[in-house]
Structures are given as structure tokens and as C-alpha cells.
Image 1 (cartoon, rainbow, N blue to C red):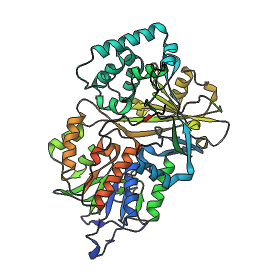
Image 2 (cartoon, one colour):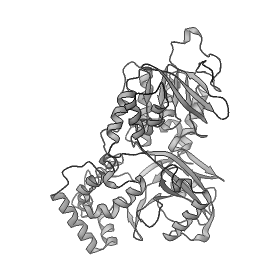
Image 3 (tube, helix red, strand yellow):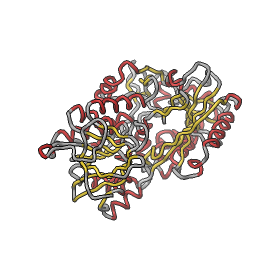
Image 4 (cartoon, rainbow, N blue to C red):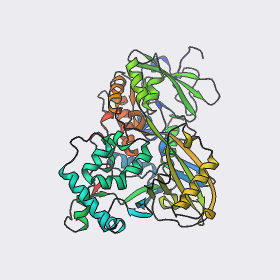
Length: 497
């Protein structure tokens, strides 16, 4: 491509090939946001509301990132299951402002499937005792007491963290198999940071005392209801994108950033490829990115220092695909989703979309399920033909006793790459190097789950977008890296007596 650089257009349609700012406008703020997921779109809406020209560049055909809603023959599919709840007043106000009249309030129900039985999640003492049996429950309790008395002195790994709180036997029963399905690495190679975010505040002691009536107030528990858009989380982000466009910003889908051009501590432009059109360079005053941190660094020109590139290459991601099965059955199970801890099948989690919202299913006579398979991009499972994956899905669903093969009507497959930033043994060291490098730029911020390589939820990602937008508008910079840093378990709530 040529060496000419174009400036960010302010019209609702295009990134113009001719300069869009007059000479007296060039010192004004204009922002390119890489990634049209929750963090990028939140930042963009805040900026256009402040009359700052913005272009959002999203590589996929639809917005929402991991929180998008896919469709097939009138059925709607949520990629991963996105409940709308938050401890942030600002996030809740944002959601209400966008979709106040199109939210449903849904009951939370999830269970664990283990050895042919369904266990309540979170675990409840009586339910668990009855289904595991007296002997096994007694051995779990003894194991818990033993590890409470003589815990691991270090809690560096997921296995150590969970064992110190629940005992080795309960770890083996309910945590090991599923966790290794998700991450594809042994639990003794997975950082304890992930456990702290996902299961902090839930202890066997608390469950037993509560069940026995010995503790009645201020119990931490999982939320019991959540809000959910009528046709999935994508409704939220499609509406946000519409508002950005209506207010003069641009949300460009199928716009892939192929290079980031830097000059010292300043990012000057990005190279964008849209469809089959020749790639173009686009300049702006500020850049916000939610693309995977490793990709961002490796696409920089001139190249980042060798130690920074090595750190970027060391970051790992976990991908997943969803096998969506349409079944000729109105009711299969009442859960929103079920965790499959059975090592004899590959499926890790099963969503029932009708239980998320009846409007996800276009008729009263069928049900759609999403079978989530965790994998790595390019491996055998990822590359399997869609027809073979649908066959695998119905075979495993039948093996688990959840439906009959004859109930299968149709199916489709959706793949989601780089869904989970991996917290392995070396990620902290690499991330520290990358954070220092990113913070050396005066007009570049990274946000969101992949932009910060942090297992954040949707609301955490949105908060990083809000902070980044404020940093563009105001001289004092907020710290996007501190969001969710306190490792407070994201889903606990105080229950009244």
C-alpha cells in the first residue's frame, strides 16, 4: 500500500480516504477503538456523548465480541452465557439506559453433573451428602479437616488454593475434571488467581453452618436472579452500536487491524483491511484497544523490543466452540446451564437457551441447547467438521441421559477464539513486562478481557472502557489495570437474615 495516511472521518458511514479534519481541527481529539465488544463499545458511546469523533474497528461481522448473540433459522444463541448483574451502579445505569424495557428478570439455576447425578451449584451440604452417600461425604469432611489443619504453605496454583479450602477429596470430586477441561492444562499448572476470582467466599464450613442453621446473617451467597435481554446479550451491543452511529461515530464490522504504526512513545495510525478492499492507514490522536494483548504488541511497527515480543508470545489463550442442537422437545431440564464434570465426555457445559429467555426459541415445540467444548484454535476438536461436531453433541447428550437421539431436529456450530486468557505459571511475569510497555505510550490504552489479559466479566470490561474514555477526555488518568484487581469474588452477595 502507499505511504499516505488518512484521518479519521466524522460522518456516519465511512473512514474517508480524504482528510476529514480541517487544519484548525487537527489538534482536537479523535479516537480509534480496536474491538467492538462490551469494553470498546462502552468507551465509544461515552466518547460520542462527549462529542469526540470515534471509529470502532471490529473484525467480526457482528458486534459484541464474546458477548455477541449468534442466530440460526430464528434461534438465538448466547456465546458463553452472559448474565446482566453488577455491583457497579454506573454499569447498571448504562444497561438500564440502553435496554430498560427489554430486560427479563430470570431465576438462576445451575447444577453439576457428576457420576450420573445432578448436584446443586453452589454445593449445598444436605443435597451433596445425600447424593455422594454417607461414606464418601464423611471422607470428604475428614479430608477438609486434614487440609485445614495442615494446609499447603504456598497457594500459587489452583490445586493448592482449592485444596486448602475444601480438602483434596472434594477438589478431586468437583473441581479437577471440569477445570482441566476448561483450561487444557493440569490444575497444578494453573495460577491460583483464577480460583480467587471465581470461587472466593464460598467455603465448605459456611455451607455446613448455614444448612445446619448455625449461621443466619450476612452469609455470602451466589446471586439468585439476574437480568437478561429478551434475545440475548447481543441485543445490548447492537443497540449501543446503533446509537454510536446515530450520533456521528462509526462502528465498522469486518474491519481487521493488521498493523499499528508507532513513533517513539506515540501511536500514529493503524492499518485496516475491510473485506476485499485494499488496506488503508488511518490516523487519530488516541487509540484504545481490546484486541488480544499479544496480537497488539506483535503487530506494532517498528517492532517492539525483543523482550516485549517474547513476553507477548508467552501469553496463552483458550478457545471454545458451541455445538447448538435444536431438539423436538419443549422441556429438557430447568437449569440455565449445567456443568459437566464427567470425564467420559468432552462437553464441558450445556446451556438451555429457552431457560435464559423464551424469546431465544422461535416456537413452543422445540428447545435449543448449546454444548460448549473447550479447545485450542487449530487442534483436532476445533478443526472437526460441523456435521461431525453435531453428531458428537447428540451422542454425548444421549450418553448423559438428557435426551434421545431421535429428538434431534437440526444443529449448527459457532467457534469463538481467544475466549479465555490463560492464567498459567508464567503469565504474571509476561503480563508485567507488557503492562510496563503499554503504559510507556502516551496515547494508547488497552481495555477489556483480552486487552488486559484478565479473566474479567462483562461489567468489569465495561468499567475499563468507561475509564479509558474518561482518560481521553480528562488530563488525570484512571488506572484500567486496577479493575477487578482486588480479586473479590464477582458473584457474591449479602443475604438478609
